[in-house]
Length: 437
Image (cartoon, rainbow, N blue to C red):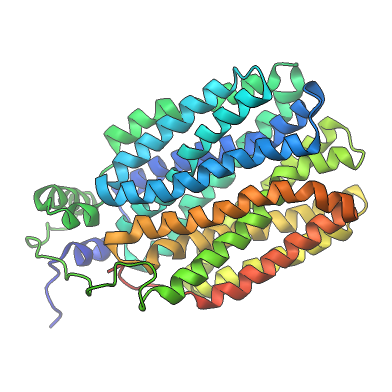
């Protein structure tokens, strides 16, 4: 006879995927897509400002990198705040911060003003991603948790595709096209109100704070949505072993090391490549409109990458899926390095886009799983924050690499970075189907 299902973890994991799960996933995913839209718009704004403000490559790099500096700080700070005040509260706050700052950036009157606004945007963006993935991961039943988190991450491709459409249709339309594009990026500030009112707080967080009655109400609502009898009254969750909440303790040191390295090398390659691809195409002689069109096609390859990753994380497991897509990303970057014709450039870019975003899906699936509830958001935020250091360095590295060996040298370095990320992924645990705590 099986043991009774009484703890919050057991009751959540015993549920099917319900309408309330779907509402949480879509609600968090919309915030994720708006985040991606904001990050993606920078690549198109850079192309326009390069001509309007006569920016040097170094100045373009600083516009891209300053946002990532804010994201590095925001990721670490957001994780700490989410473990202290709750996932939902901090999620809503991050949307408000970066939405308002993006709208303000549309009014920028100088390079200095734009840099200040982009840093503030980065604070909100950096905090939002690890908090949202932690919230969704803590609700998803363990048998499909990885797939659910990859689907959440797939909203990134939706937002990036919207950014590509805005960049293709709106940015070249007038001298103020880039301002209107950034103005659309203020939508997250409005959506923050929806998040604050419509999404539930994490049950695991509520229990960790002794808010048992609130946790019971959330789990009961999920059980009601599933059409199953309300579970027995909650019993206390087992406390983590003493010292296990430290990210660099003996039990967590190996996985923290692997996670930080993967986040660093993936960020370096992804943001270095996709922030600069439109500008590099212009630099290689393609027109602005044609360059933005190529980028749009390359971006569309992200969606099937996520779809395959969502299947493989539950079939192969997180580690094998992550490593496979990282190796594929390295191959895509190497192909882009030697591509010469428009057809080969687009094909290599699509392979890179497909594999890179599949890797991101697997990475976000595994990241919240490696830590206990008490430091889950903090651990995810710290890894993301360390990765953002690489995203600061990546755009700044492109101009000197271009001077040394052109586009080929740039993407050869990015390919090597993907390969190093694949090696680092071997340090991560495999948590497919395991309960979070």
